[in-house]
Image 1: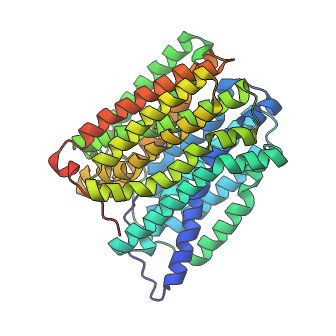
Image 2: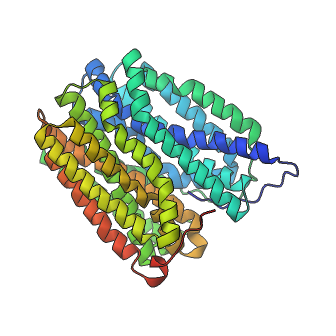
Image 3: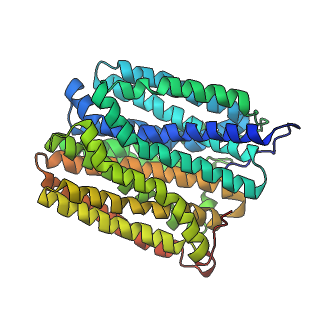
Length: 465
């Protein structure tokens, strides 16, 4: 996410100090990514200890992703208002305290509550960290390199989640994955406090009511999908409530000056299609990671370490695929890596589908690795979204894309989890799950085509230095 902030006015700010601050801010983002993947590996152990069904497992993940998606735009405006370093440190503190609540949770209700507060802390932290990176490196070329490091370190955090989670579960209880956050947040917070200067506060209006409406809409839709097993009336009631709240949300955006999301940002069709690409990307990636992990642990009885190794090919390919995408986009434009990424997702998900039918873990690992190549689409979709948005909304465009991606992750977890809950007991359940994922990747190909269909967007090159 890119947020426009004033250039740092501090006269003496050494290159070494700036890069050390960049490492700290990158590790903060990596912590958010790590928490998204490491908790998934621990779901089997959590279920054994606290009980609960598949819907409870879904809420452990979506309790984090829903507030992360819903509060991100408002958090960016709040950082402009009070200072991004202050808000970044506040987010780290909330994240650490919420981790303690998760580790001490005696039942699922407390664990999910802790995950909600973790998500709010992550939503507060994420836009502030990228704003501070932009402030530390105001020159466009240096900023591009710094943001590349920032995103690359975060990818390492996501990739480390399955393996690190498996190691912790092999030697400690599941609570260890949350206790781990305390020393990490402390060290990151001290580094940011000492190395990163505060951004000058700006006068920005906050749309808190809009943020709450966004939370209510996404939470209600997610609840309706997750709880479909409890009867269709609940689903219909949730969908009706979503329609009412969403209608009021957009009515308010049209009528209120200074709303959190000006509708004219969607005036460019390429931008709207790029937002759809981001939604489908995380829908497939997060949904696959959850459902495959639960099948490995609940159906096949694999340990946390074994299941972490089984899905590790996906995580490690994501880690290396994202940086490689930048070079492909620089050479061929954004359409090629986006098409390659979503095409690989189709092939990978179908490979996992056949692995489930044949009960073959080696084939599943191959499929997960191929599916991880969907990461080729990540930097390119960001480039398209920023390039096609109105110039005055370039910073907001990045926030909208990241919000859409987190929403996609929440919905993907809800949908695939609901399917998994209705077909328990066999690896054959991977067939309908991966068929849905393949279908979403195909929709991603369609959205990519329309997002890059204009001559200017299709020929756009990403500057790589």
